Image (cartoon, rainbow, N blue to C red; front, side, top):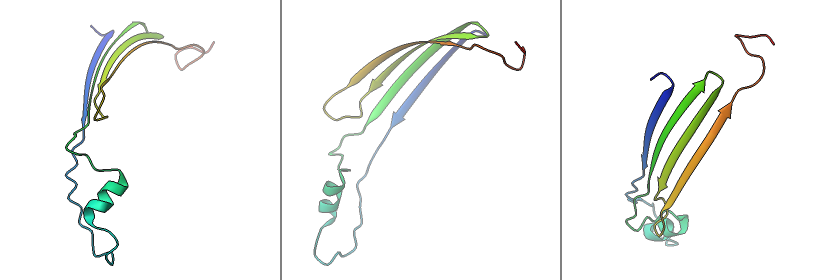
Length: 97
């Protein structure tokens, strides 16, 4: 099974938003700073799953299929399928043509 490969990747982010803001002279509170920064998660924990499998029919080519489920946005889930063909052409270390 030397010509086959498989992979799994999982990404996850958890923000506790425990921001300590020093006295800004009464201009802003810590919650105001978090909201202004765009980092307020409102309890959402973004995550992404990726599954990949590829097959190499020769040493110069590879066919790869990948699925990704992206839940990084709080209101939507993005499902992506990718099919890729990779081919190497030209001279390299094993051949000088």
